[in-house]
Image 1 (cartoon, rainbow over the protein chains, first blue to last red):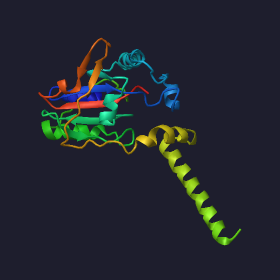
Image 2: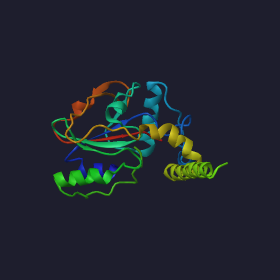
Image 3: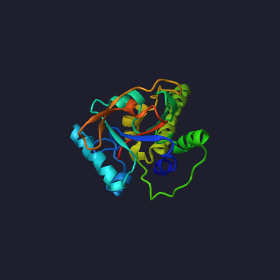
Image 4: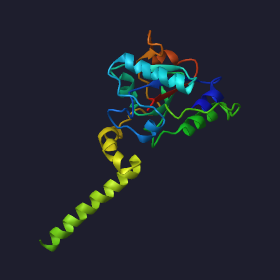
Length: 134
Length: 88
């Protein structure tokens, strides 16, 4: 998504929304997260959630605008966001693209295709190594 | 045990094994089947928003944790790509 952001940030706005953890240590932890030292318990407070989001942005040098879901998980519930999902909202506040539930149906190529159809194909930049999440 | 019940039991066990193998493939390994069933499967039917629907407005916290903003504040001028996810 960082590459798509770099390619289309002059045409569209981007917002990453951090929602509850998908593979925390106290739920369904993945071996890959242990290997990469990405080990967090599911946040119980907003301060803990903010701290993990900050860790992610700093460690991954993540450049996209960022927001954090509240502890009532309102964004997650409204957008069926967990564990990861992509949307495009149009200028009128309507859903223009609704992606599938990640990781199996998380498809950034569909977002790129939507943007390319609207603004033309853009591949002008070669960004640094992009983080895989979110 | 009658032939009928042998076939029924055998079919049931076969289905269980097939389901476990399928879930192991989806989860990544047999050890992750519990996590997939416990945490992921209950959410796999979710996702009712479709293209053309009004985008729900939600209140979000800024990364520094100091203030809130509304998602819909970011819409209007240009299309908004929204990426939901977490670190793990």
